[in-house]
Length: 115
Image (cartoon, rainbow, N blue to C red; front, top):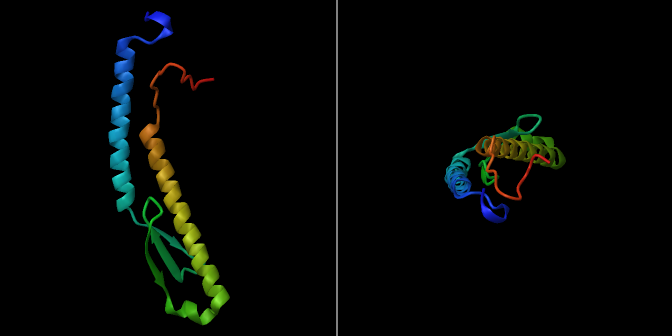
């Protein structure tokens, strides 16, 4: 047992090793999210918007017939496609982050997450 309630050197070494691995995996995840293109569509499927896994806008595709529906209907369709793309992107990011940190148990002093 270490003095003053500190963890032993082996525990600290293992915790730092795990932290370094997470940092490396997080960098790979960032690159993967940057390369993704996630599509969102409007309810009438006349608009498609693609965002990266980090919510960066990538491209937009609009069916020309949408413009004939009028300004308000076109705006609504575009907004709904953007919301759909954003939800797809944030869900993907959250899922991949959970995969990265899932089951993580660093056992660091003062970090008792079970309570």
